[in-house]
Image 1 (cartoon, rainbow, N blue to C red):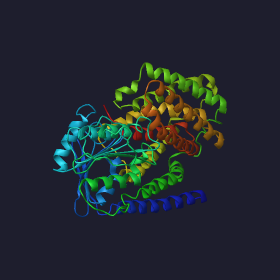
Image 2 (image 1 turned 90 degrees about the vertical axis):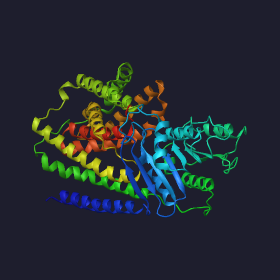
Image 3 (image 1 turned 180 degrees about the vertical axis):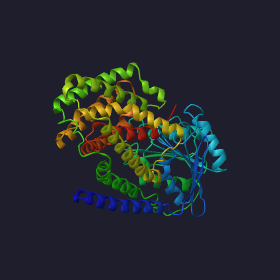
Image 4 (image 1 turned 135 degrees about the horizontal axis):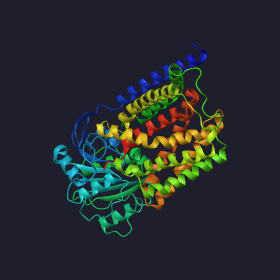
Length: 500
């Protein structure tokens, strides 16, 4: 064994030990909370506190989320004595239903009737807060808490005991809706932030406030959790210390586990590639394209894709709501970019033997599955359940195939022997493509995708650029990294977005 392989093995072994320790710490942070899972058309998870039950809270998730994303807040409330009911709306997570097969109102009616009991409160995030407030407007719930809510058509007595919390960096449609809702619910023309109006005894209590968070991070914000708990305690007349201890799931351990996987991935890919690739592998492109020319080619391909996806989007047949636009754009961007690149650099296109290509793709497939599985475990435990239905798995495969041309095109433009240039060109291509896509989505009116989803997609794609770079470095094939990128993108998009 060479020194290089020995170092890689030591790094991987250390990461495996830290990974297992992190999972143990994460599982130990549940604090005596027990979970019961009820699968079905509308899957439900019930978190029961370790001691006496103070009340029940039904929490509704938002768009591009599922019940698992409400786990951190749910575990915190359960550790403080509340029974918490989490569920998947139709089309989301592990639900067996399509988005429009059952309304959100009917879903809440089903969940509360079967799992909430006589007295319960409602909470929700974003789209889920809209559903919770709307359900509360029909007389349901002892209290309603909305995180990042954009619902303002409330009344003096409905919903009962309304608390609205948003991030200071939240969406432009969310921030002004909070005082507007409290104004409608109290008759006060200019209600003040953090001031409680009305009384809990008759259900007219109303308040709004802002915390240091954005539309996503508010779900993991300690101040939002504490204020939610205090509101519930006041609703049910429970006297507690003014600053309850912060517990919940120890999310830092989840991020440590994910970090160790990413650290171990590069040496793991190196060892894996040594097992299935031959010493005489072809080197791939001798050098990456000149930076300016590569970026101009990527820009031209992206512009053509932006036009084409508005004319006809083949990804719409996947049923993947909103993300189908991004998937269709990436498909077109890959095809157009490869065509332009081929016309500009016809003699420079690398050739691969069938045997080398098969071995490279085998490396990518094994590495991709290991990476996804290892990251999915802490993610599922901590803050986002990974759907495992047959429909979702088929959707992941479809998205992977549709996005593969984009990643192949990027690798053909970027990969070469110059490490710095390869990474710079690859990162630039991804930034340009997503920038053009964002502009096209804004023009078409999909601002939610741009301001909420794109800030997550961009760092993801930049991280995948590093994965792609090292996949080419160890296998010599531009297809290995592209295949890895497509697998991971398919997994993430198909597991997050609702299915219509």
